[in-house]
Image 1 (tube, rainbow, N blue to C red):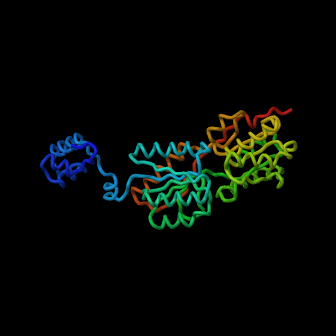
Image 2 (tube, one colour):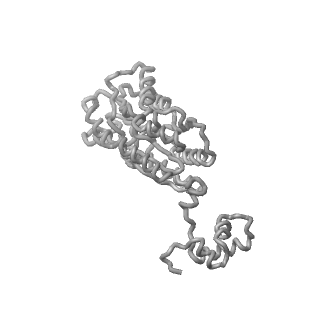
Image 3 (cartoon, rainbow, N blue to C red):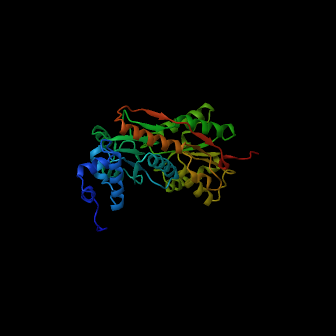
Length: 341
């Protein structure tokens, strides 16, 4: 047979002198076809190089076993580590992933959502780059039957399935630890208001410093984004305050690395002159010098749970939504370990 032509079940039927319906039922595992016949048909199919039409199978079954994954970017290894866990979990269950990146751009994020619609994925695992901008589009897709699971950053919508940690609680513990180590004047660099956890992390910081009578409004700054370059810009904003502060708590690991990089280029020693902490647990935190203290999210578990939840929602057509809160841990590293005089 011409190897350049796609082999069909009709070719198998002609080869064996049996009906197309018999071949179709045998290849789909129909036990009404004698086992000996099913084995012979599969052997002929393999010899001829037959490959099932996945599109046709998907239409027949009502789903494609494909999950779309929308991520903000890959600059932060936080997302890469979670995606690897998502992909591994889905692969082991016989599913495939279709990943796209919004690049922290709300317009590109909308295109990502429209792409998922176009390719008719069964469900979507998503970390949004803005809590509000594409919420209407997401709600429209949910109303039409699309299944979503969100992690880390979620849209401000009711009744959605999301995976997160207690941002307020862990930020409080992180700042409390710094205070207990002797740090008194602590700058906080918050994430943009467009992210749903910004207020929670800010509250964790303010509650901790207020508890010890250390709150100063002038020590709170806001990042324009969540990239390395945003950290560089933040460092410029606080450079004049460095001599009067003990520590800098940053809303995100990649941003924290940007801050530290710029300060070190200015000759500022970390942590001797000022301590720095991040948030999220990106693996790159342990690749810089000094390694950065951070709140380490359970990234493997986040990915595994997201994949399991989306498969359950698809397979069982589940409509019930809930919040899955996971446990994080604080990784104390050299960036906040100072020897006090």
